[in-house]
Length: 128
Figure 1 (cartoon, rainbow, N blue to C red):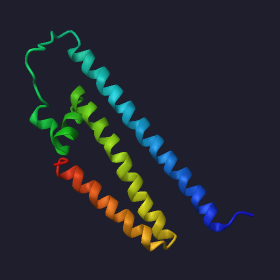
Figure 2 (cartoon, one colour; figure 1 turned 30 degrees about the vertical axis):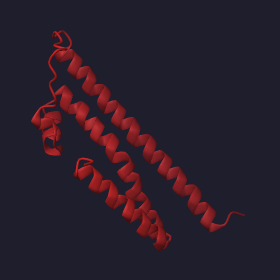
Figure 3 (cartoon, rainbow, N blue to C red; figure 1 turned 45 degrees about the horizontal axis):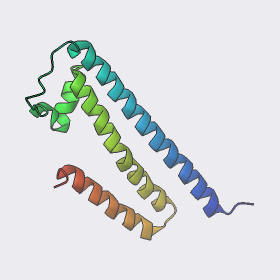
Figure 4 (spheres, rainbow, N blue to C red; figure 1 turned 180 degrees about the horizontal axis):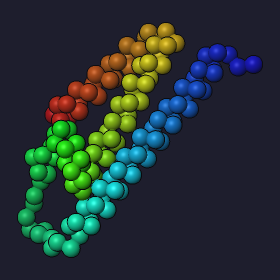
């Protein structure tokens, strides 16, 4: 008979695996949809390889990305998919904090909260 800790670990691993698969799959689907929309609207435009154009300012922050995606802008939808991809490991860490707290494993709760703080700091500071 399996020990309750082993059962918890198995369930924990299964849920985490499903969370990561679902997050990556949804993000990939959104990026694909955005790519199709972008190509449908802009696929015939000529390329100017000599001129570098960065992302427009409205696609450099979360609110702008969401508004652009709501407007069915292909680039905005692609950026939303990339945000979802970035959010997937963050969701994994958040879930881990809850799971460790449910098991009353306070050492791992603290360690995982530190990891979460570093992730959030890195995302919000732009990796600088």
